Image 1 (tube, rainbow, N blue to C red):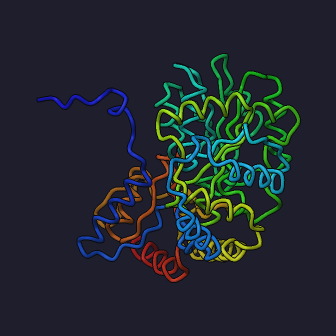
Image 2: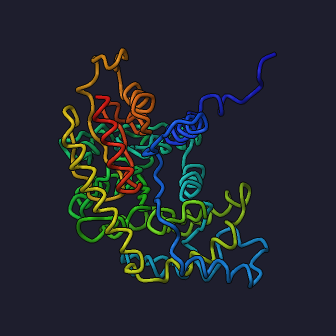
Length: 394
């Protein structure tokens, strides 16, 4: 008997990050000492002041269905945050709260894309962008970048990728997986190209905006001509260590926000009530309340770069944000290690998992087959032990 699943699900890839995490859990259950550097999940606990807010929300009986697009006072807190941190003015009817930024992205794809519409993805890109676009029957168009350009797309590359079918550009800054951060000048260069093509919309994924080790975060929506055609995506998972709370949000033109609300109303309705109340507290707090986590991520970044720099064959850039390094490991391709021939980044990542007991993610899942993604959202002791093991098996 054939299994009657839809073509849609059969064509959908499994998230490489979640697949590697599942494999690591399986090996742990077998008794192996696995160090997980595959998931993009802070190892910090949620700050106590946010926990207290969630407890109060429970006591205050926030247990009913929430509005599809989010509580009004949360949307006001998001509006205030956009103004404070990004110099962006979004009214409440331009904001939609969702069950994580991933749902925000899926909403956008489903309401904006028709079959065959092209979406430009500077590669490397976050692992789910491509499949979310495909699920909405769009066509991902990868624009390859390299470590030599700090994994950032140039204006010339952007323009060369544009065709009459181009509908959108999706990118993240700081970037998952490379940690690259676009400066305001670099975003202005991209915007100068986009102004020639007024029918192209932009998804600016800014979920890592506070985990930024260089200058002040820059949002492309602030650049001349870009506000009405940019959907700014954010959430509380990364900077506030609230991954399991599943609260994301967008700021966009009111007609886009209205469409996302309409779609979400048929899929999940409103995001969880307790998480929304806690998010108000998180966003109203000054960024200084979470600075200790940002400082620690910078220390870990410096540590892992120093340690990986002692391994022959790892080519590294200096990521300016997020909590990942994305080394080019293509020098190992074609080599035999402990009886295993390394043909690609998937082979390399699996080799590290099986021989070093360290979980990473192959770069092919992010559109760059020469690299692997290593998360340093782990303790310093785990980072040191992981790199020691990697170095030993290489």
